[in-house]
Amino acid sequence: MSVTTIQPKKVRKGNLARSQAKAAWGLSAPALIIMFFFMILPFFMAVFYSFTNRQLVVSAKKPTTFVGFANYTKIFTNSTAANAFWCTFEYTIILVPAVLILATLLALLINRKAKGVTFFRTIYFSPQVVTMTVVTVIWRTFYSSGSDGLFNTILTAFGGQPQNWLQNANLAIPSIAVMSIWQCLGMQMIIMLGGLQFIPEELYEAGTIDGANSWQQFIYITVPQLKNTLVYVFISNTIYSLKLFTQIYMLDDRLPKKVTSLVYLMYDAGFNDKRVGYSSALAVVFFVMVLIISCVQNKITERD
Image (tube, rainbow, N blue to C red; front, top):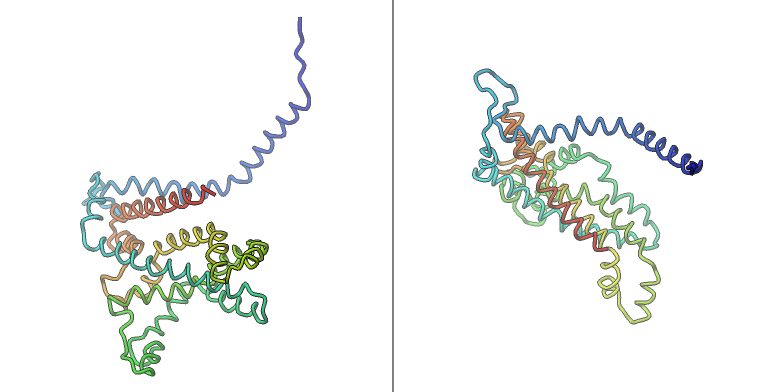
């Protein structure tokens, strides 16, 4: 008759793994609970409410009923939502390329070993520490339509005509984009600078020996080595631009009615018009948009 012997080392390893797992779950439990109640549960509630006529304040006169895809149909058929999509898209196509190019140029500039480079890094990064609410309050004075506005004063000094920067529907979104670029550029510059400093100097030395000039080194060494950093900055700023809200909210009294954004429309429908069902449908559409962008990022970066 054979007797099975238990190996003490395997038992100890199993007990250790179980105790580590319990400790990990215990330490992560507070964060998981908060995530469940404030992120996961609200998301599924939004999906459910998007198929109903749910109101912010439920009354007996208008009970919550199932309306199917009516809210989604309304999103893609009414002019208000279409205009919100267009304004958000216009803001995105202005902000993202500008931030990508300017952040790269500034990172290249401050990556040099020169006197005062730390001072310039601080200056370029300083707008990042100011909240967008404060930035908007300051810049709305710059964009004042009167002759006392900063930008109109500069235009007048050079013989130009004062502009209604925020009241003009054609200039409002570009003006908001310029303000946002100024505020977020510092952080993106730091990210690009981190990517530049991980590029081995030996590559540039080899390029110099082979006779490559500065432009060729930038195209054939810097850009390929910065690929993942560039993709990250591109995707993160695209998602950031889709969340346009604070600027529209703070400037609402000065902007034309048709200048809005997807997130602001979501807020306006849910809290001002009290149409929680419609607002939830907008939130689900926004989530799908961000999810698609994230999947594209993963597909691009997983190759490397």
